[in-house]
Image (cartoon, rainbow, N blue to C red; front, top):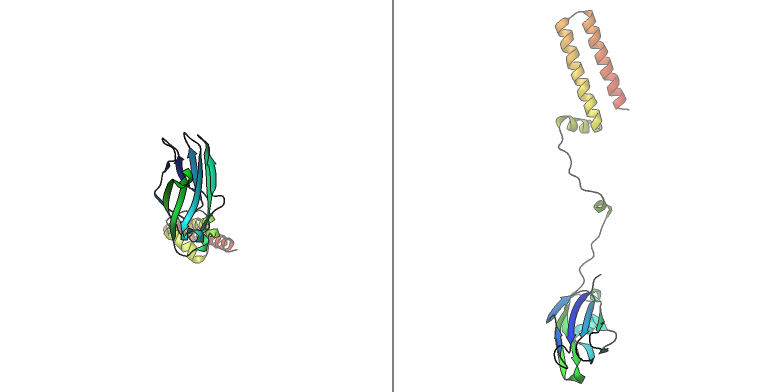
Length: 192
């Protein structure tokens, strides 16, 4: 999880000055206060005021900042322990108390965890538009390639019946019987 970062410039321009990039902050994550030293060295003290100690803590509050030095002050945040936002002030003091900077800080409860099940690992591909043959084969319980075989069998039956009716005679009826037999064998193999 990324930290929420606050940059504070120490002694930029004049002695015993503090400038922050935020006046207020609302977060549920750990906070890193980045103290950037400028022209003169300084002693800096950090503390939490208000109800912030219910959800946050500073391990080491006192720091010595050299010019052009960067020191990170970690503030541990335990937003899982709270049910409602906790407000207070992050105070940064330098010059033995002659200069202080207050940043309004609100710690919010952690967002709820999101349950991830196996359905999210499978791609969500749109289903192809179904045709009459596809719906018919699915209703019967056959796979999609079986629908093509059924369609070809039906076409063969129509052609054989039309040919037998047009030509007539025993040879045409025998041909129709062979086609019907072939289609029945194909249906039997599909259902196996």
